Amino acid sequence: MNVAKLSDKELILNYLDSAHDKCFEELLTRHKSKIYTSIFLFVKDHDLAEDIFQEVFIKIIDTLRKGKYNHEGKFLQWAMRISYNLCVDHFRRSKRRTKVSPSETFDIFDVLEVKDDNMETSMIKNQTYTKVRELVDLLPPEQREVVILRHYADMSFKEIASLTKVSINTALGRMRYALINIRKMVEERHIQLQA
Image 1 (cartoon, rainbow, N blue to C red):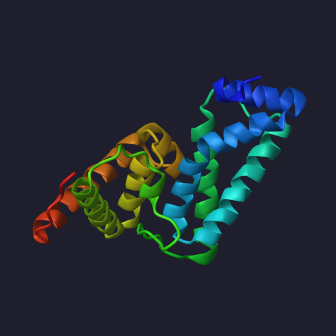
Image 2 (image 1 turned 90 degrees about the vertical axis):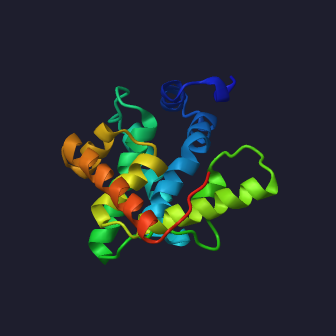
């Protein structure tokens, strides 16, 4: 069986029917970078992100084995909801503030697929990404949260609203204000954004 060609739903069903570890391994490999990246952007700590990531997959396995997963939703969005909730739980316990900035060991842009560019284009992109990350970090927490979930975790506004327990209009409004604030900061600081 070529597990790489199976859909997420087929991988889950095969895993449940025959405890086919290769299927679960494929599911994990397929979605690891997005889930890990979104966790890391919230917690800003490599070791903590690894711990929460493992917790996410323990919860996923547990839910699958108990037969409580429904196939109506997409697997990735479900996994992202679990990871978001675990991050929120962590912050409730520790009352820490998130920051969106790279660490020595991990940078979100390392996992994004980028076409080969010449050195100059590559340097400009890196500078732009760094500037954008710094600006996102300066946003109020609710706006920063929506930007991270939308652009880094690839979630729809409907999913963001559900996850953050606000209306879609509130999620859209927070994104709108985030973009306004970023534009304002770009103008105030005379920042050149090129891509």
